[in-house]
Image (cartoon, rainbow, N blue to C red; front, side):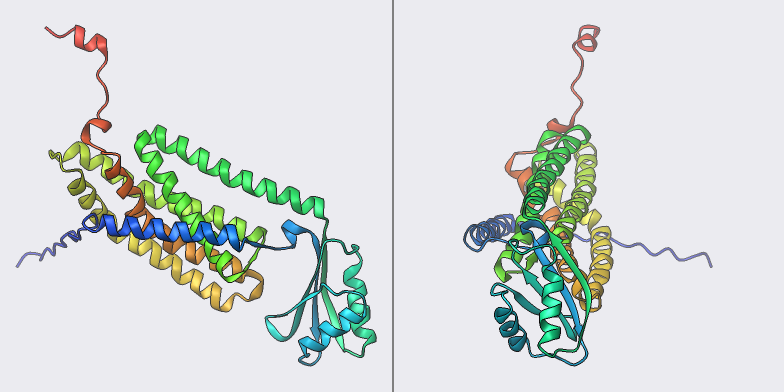
Length: 310
């Protein structure tokens, strides 16, 4: 008896069927994110605003309100006191107009008030440095999107580049909207996470776009929605496997990684989930809106070749 061959059929999910619904949902979420950024704004960390950050470890779990009142009495009325990781760990943030040695002064004030504690770290970022980092971070995002557009244009076609860049902007705005909605701390680690999201989402979009280009050249049909549907279905197993394994790692970091990388992990988790969605629905949806066809992907014949024909 010969070997038994098991054949697995490609899923036949009609992704482009509800494209008007998914397109409307994407527009709604992006619009809400823009409104949140406009009205709430981002809660920039010390990396961008400047100021002092002091991390303290108390021998016993402290009362945060008592710490706040002690700091107000000591001349730090704008101090933000937060629990950090373990119940005995506390982070204190001070505005940018405090001196570089404000961390030592905070430690001395609490020690003088009778608290038993240890100074774990004290950081200071000047306001000029923070403003420069904020500007450079924004320019870095714009530069990354511009390079992506050029790369996809040269590798595929201009319509593909528009779809890819709009999908990336969609992903970035939603991640920023989540941080604006909950007032989460936005620092350099979160900016690094957003740049990583751009790379991840672009990779997903390129895989799908590559298959769409191949199928337009192979499949003899003028139905662009059918070609895109087949392409997404053919890459679906790869997309799910990549996204799920990545999300498993990120969720583990989110739960067990601690406060230090919490916002970094959260930005990546949201970005990877949204990036997987956008690589299927946003970029492909835009290709249909721009009337992508087989003719767009054919190599134009040279005039010399046409003249040589009999």
